[in-house]
Length: 106
Image (tube, rainbow, N blue to C red; front, top):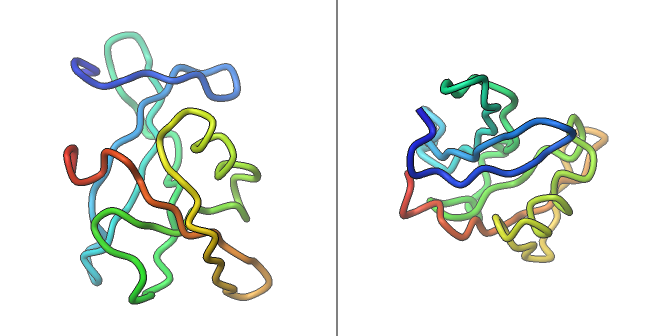
């Protein structure tokens, strides 16, 4: 159920953001869920686990490789703020973002 969660519009879908942790590192994992009637269904994992010491319970790298411009959307909707820090993994560069409500909702 979506009770108490803020809904956002993303590419024509009503979505919510939820927070959990990566099993091996315990760092923040950020999920996007779409609303299907009264149910929340998996939409995408918007964070990436780069095993960086900069990741913690409130910061995460976002997957701009598979979800282009997700960083901009997160900022525009007041969900996260860009730290200005970037990390390269493979051929991609990922921005580190601070998620404003992660500690409250995790």
